[in-house]
Length: 352
Image (tube, rainbow, N blue to C red; front, side):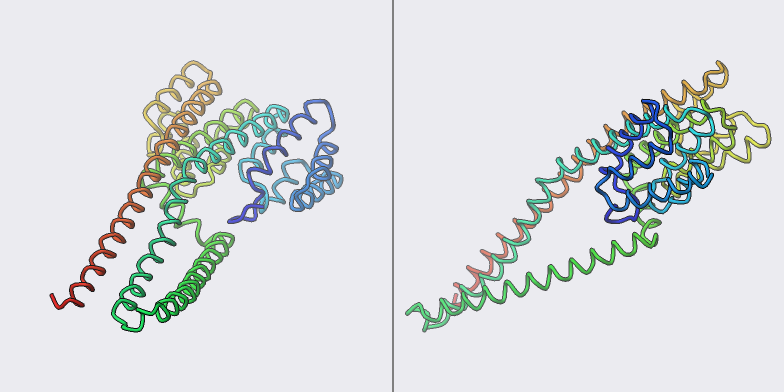
């Protein structure tokens, strides 16, 4: 289960999807495949979800209905592809695609974590060392102005007292950070934070490019699979838009639905959608004219996924640079403040 969401974490979905794909591709019935995946997982949420799905399959429900009943724990992309794969008779293809998709997503996430690890560590170190240095300066100045410190007794007592004060300050700071973190988790699980974070990641650079390109890659990837399964175009758009997991992008893509229902071509229907790139519009037009809409949608998805990978690299570099600049400004402030207060105190002592 993810920290900020009740849904199963990506790192858990990677081996799970690969296991489902391998077992079903080897010829096992879907019921046995689902039950084996649940029983062999170490994650309790996965065990409970797939045990429930297995019971519903035994009760006569379809795989899509069983997956939809567990939508609280399963990502929309997972649910929609299972349902469309079963409906279109291409469940083996859908399961393989799910496994590849989550493997790529996990690899991208780990890349971001690796690139941001050092800057974040530097920022944390600057906080602890900086607050310590600024606080110890008061102790040094107080010891220098106290005549009793010449024996060393008062100075040691002051330093010992400061260490206790400093540790109490950091304890209060960590408690406050923990409370804010817990509140963010609670709000995220309730869905309250989704609109705010979605708005920021969709429209604020450099995260906006990552979010938009990755969402469009998901959309066209699922759209291509749905088209290949024989699903109607309106249902393809609606289901594929839901897999973006972004309220603002989904709403933008759904503008095409009423136009398609009125008989417009896809090129015309997607005209009001601002998140489609000029290249994707051209490739959709080519797909319609050539009758190879599925193939063009797959190419668009691959192109956007490559763009998303480049955007991730750019975003992590920008964010890493901003963190390093923040650390540099913090260190500079500490040094300037330290020497200003130190020499200012000495000048006051000397009466200058």
